[in-house]
Length: 370
Image 1: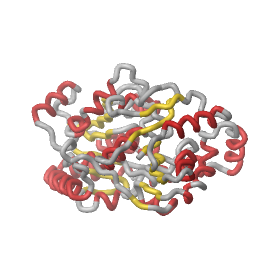
Image 2 (image 1 turned 180 degrees about the horizontal axis):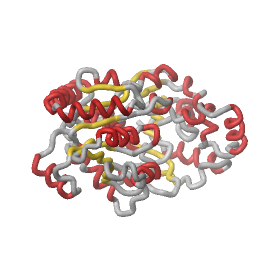
Image 3 (image 1 turned 90 degrees about the vertical axis):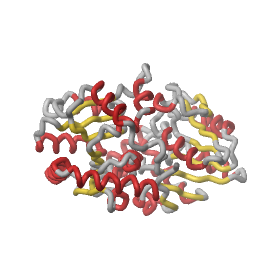
């Protein structure tokens, strides 16, 4: 089985790695184009990978030559295209025409941004991107190919409704993501200068649609000196803006480095994610009500559940279903409601503890790869 990714240097490589783990002990390989950045720094130790040089694949005619190199590099008779891009789905369909099988795995609606543009904006994008097949304007083209795939797998019911197929919640290894030794957690907390603090932990890559700013707004409303938000993940431009915002600087702590990360800081932190998650008094997943967010099911949700952490999530995507009986949801964007719920859980730790125990049990029984 060949798992084909659109960019072997992007964080989306993590989805391919999780698929490989789910398919074990079947023989699998992960293949993808290298646009000159090498393997994604978060996952350099998670190989092996088959990297295909494709520095100019973003434009015609180089796209055609690089696509052929990808096709030649693939050894599996079954190809799983991770994400619907012009350098994944068409390559998988080529293998189908050669007698193999083609599957597409969707973990978000990558074409959501383009779909929300006005007709004029779309027309301008099509004209500008005519020679750039990996740009947003080509998403409708590749999405029109999805019905030809043998199977469609997706991570949310939103994606299933839009593209058909089957919903697969990825889950996590509940042996790896499990409560950590108390002395190790305390030592990490001291090393971060957070001794005595109560922490909301947000793990992952911070993007606008993920609603991280909503947590900070809730903390501003609560105005409790002992409470802080710890973001564990790469420092994106958006996260950097939040760090430099005078309203939020008091409440925000970041454990991470810029995405390019030549020192390997993000990789080391990622390898210790269970320890960082165990710093949390609670976890908040404040997805906004956008098509992109509705299409996503954050893997960090399952990691938090496996760690036995109480989770507050917005009423978006499949979060209400996953959190039923082991967490709570609130209307997306309602910072007052979020602040009230955070305050209640911190003031009544027995509620948070009970929900955390239920969360781990639900994850072990329904979303575990252990």
